[in-house]
Length: 437
Image (cartoon, rainbow, N blue to C red; front, top):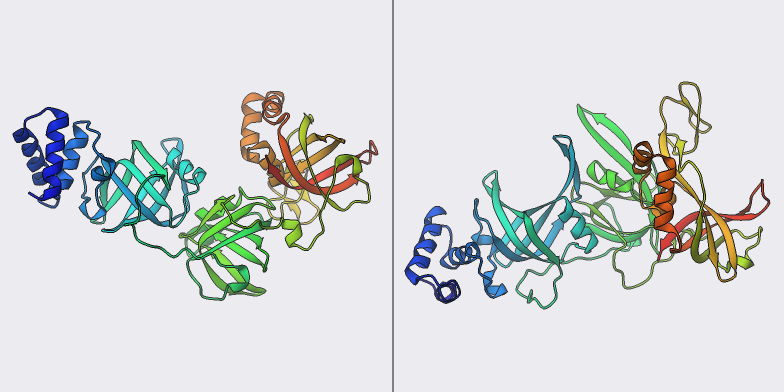
């Protein structure tokens, strides 16, 4: 028996109070169950876990090369080699999310599948390529004769945990490209950019294969280019708004009609509000548009684009939604049995878009501000479809009351265009981008 497992056996005997012979029998039983593929220490660790023992954390962890189909209660420390775009699915009338990752330690690599709340957790904790994951209570399955790792319902994960020695994990290059560095034919491209514009996603069918595609414009200090997201990742672009700061991982480049394009396929991922060392200018500044920071009392009708900071004092009454064209995203007017878009003509259907009016104040005064589309969704914290569902279930007034309770007195910074209201002759600001405090 190897030295490591001997020390583990002694710890198990001491902490469990069980005879050494019984512990050794359990270890042999585990080894037989996995046809001799499980090491002495791996079998000892599994026995300790089943007995509910809390041993030294580093000695509890297993190596990827030790994992076999059927194992459970497995703990590991791994490095993220690749994170794929989350997928949404529906089963038995219930919706869910899953996310696949490729993780590795010094013994090998394996696919890790996370489900539901754990997908949200890695997004909130900022997991990305090169992050360290501490995993507790995993189980192992197999697919096409390859072992796959799954975090159990009661499992735990930590992103870049403190006080953990991860020096033995593999090194990984995680270069972030400037947009002016991109050339045709690159793969595994990472970039930190601002969103300039998001176009409506469209569905397509080619050779009996259905798919989805979404285009959007991105920029950094060096360049602005078109990006294209495909299928599952296209769904993520619908949650983006102008001025969002994002990190794009795992993309590839192609030569387009108007220059280099960045394409996001099944290996790509979008991370909102990544941690960055140097601040990136706002979307309007990257477009070369001057934005003036002002106090509300100093605003003038001749101002073009301004930035103000204040608290939300009031949330106006309104329908919260308006009809938009499914092709161009512009306002669509309801006809008898159709919708009329001034840009695209008559449409059979429309797409709901969010709208909200709020009064914002600073120490110098207050002003009414109107938010449309993605900017309104970001302020409210709900998508247009989610707003539509809430109104259908609870009614408009109850939905408005819930939004008022959430937004009142919250601090925001917004950039927008000043105009004079045609009815009241008072100044108001149409929001172009927003940052919540």
